[in-house]
Every structure is written in structure tokens, then in C-alpha cells.
Length: 168
Image (cartoon, rainbow, N blue to C red):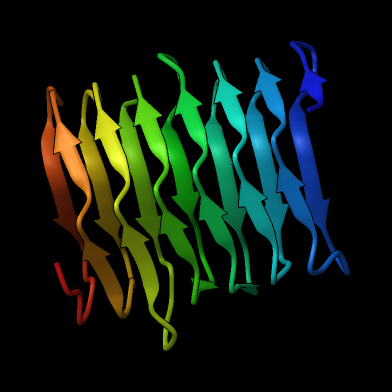
């Protein structure tokens, strides 16, 4: 277990030619991002505790962001934008069994383009203020199955601005 404390802008940052990495069993507190992945593919983000980030616990961002496995992470913060974001170009990603607490948005999909399906499976999301899951922009082929959305002040699932072929 690695402990990355306050003072880091990004606890873990992977970009460019980084591929097939596993980020597992880390504790990241504070900073803007717990894990920030930019324009890379085939990453494994597993069993991490990401606490009190100011922007995102886990950000998967920019083209291409393909075939991530994000599983069994704890993401908790009261002052971030979202626990996990799949941003522009994210496709074929699997978010499975994550626990998200105390966020404005639990999981946010924004312009997460297809054709490969982004799967959200059995995530436990509570104590959000806006929505447990927010989907906006050109999001294709989303599959949401067995997620537990409870004790949220806002929406369970919020869908806006053009998602296509979602299966909920």
C-alpha cells in the first residue's frame, strides 16, 4: 500500500505511452485528482481508497481512453465534482463494484463515445447532492446494470443532451 497525502495535485497521473499498468491498493488523500489518466488505454485501477479530492477521485480523460477496468475502489469526498468521470473519448471501460460517497455526482459520463460499450456494474453510490450517475453529451452504448443508488439528495440517474443507445 502506498499512501499519497495532501499536497499532490494528482495522486497518480498516467498519460502518453503508458499502457497495461495496474494501480492497486493505494490510499490517496487530498489534491485535485486521486487518479488521472489522460489519452491512454488498458489500465487497471483496483482496490484504491481515494479520499477528499477537490475535482475527481478518478478521471479517465481524452481520446483514446479505452478498455480500463476500474473496480472495487472507495471514492469519498464532500467537495469534488464527481467520484469518477469517463470523459471525452472513453469507450469500452468497465466500472465494477466501486463505492462512491459524498459527491455532487457519483459517476459522470461526458462525451464518452462509442462504439464500444462503457459498463457500469454493481457500483454502490450514496450521499450525492446532484445525481448518483450523470450522463451527458454524445455517450454511445452505455450499459448500467445492478448499481445500488441510495440516500442521494438529487437524481439517481440523470440523462441529458444526447446519449444514444443506453441500456439501463
